[in-house]
Amino acid sequence: MKVIVTGASGVLGSAIYEAFKTSGVDVLGLAYSRAREGLEQLDLTRKEEVESVFGRFKPDWVIHCAAERRPDVAEKDPDAAQRLNADVPAHLASLSKSLKFKLVYISTDYVFDGTSPPYTPSSRTNPLQLYGRTKRDGEVSVLAVDGARVIVLRVPVLYGPAPKNSDSAINILLDVVQDCSGKKYNMDHYATRYPTNTIDIANFLVRLTALKTPIPPILHYSGDEPFTKYEICLTFAKILGLPHDHIIPNAEAPSAADATTRPRDCHLYTRETEDLGVEGGLGLSLFEEWWTEYLKV
Image (cartoon, rainbow, N blue to C red; front, side, top):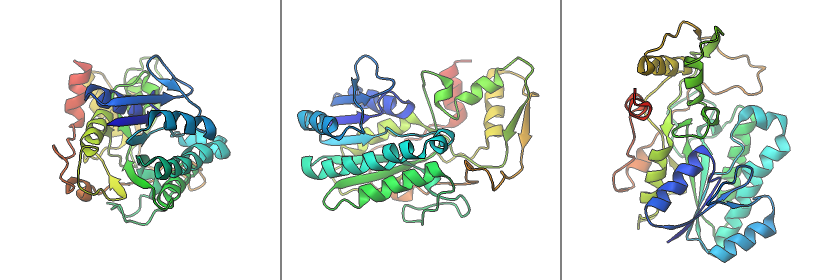
């Protein structure tokens, strides 16, 4: 089996690339702005170059992780976010049809508005901000390509090994907890999140690609432990044995005028994924347990 992983220098993409590599699969990792040794640099918006690389490698599976994942950045350059999050996946889906590979498009829980969880794969999407809309548009574009073999995999906020804590909305809270500068932080205690481990997702995808039975077009993969960002900070403070007086809980709902408003609760219902019969099931880590081991406190 041959696999291409796009966005292979990112937090999720790097975990997926390493998981397939460790499993003995012939895997090609693609990256652009943060290409490193072992990865091939490729601008996914350059269609001819993409077609050349994919045609040469002839993948059986493509795991498409590359995206503009930062809502604030997406708002500043909507056209660039639309190109990367919707137009590029549409092109990859058309290549899936012509080159006969299976495409996994990594999407997000932010395609939902957070008002009526839990959300099933068939729940109506209603993103609140531009980032969610571009990812929703990506879903629509890949599923619309007749004859393409596409799986949309929605995941929530992610954590795991990362080059920098700022690469993850969860990991960066470690820096907040460890900040001894005297700065005060107002931390969200309104929205519920379900942090999910990138290594868990990566290992699940390795097992999913070995599945011989049909796979539905939309799957959900999510941790099941609810946290606000403030509660995550408390967990990190507990693990590290640090005070948290400088972190102030903010339980107020965000302003409706905020263009990057995060939905309140986008809990993803995963029963359909669990029922697929993938060996080992979802294989979810427990949040505090994983971080305690990872930080080796």
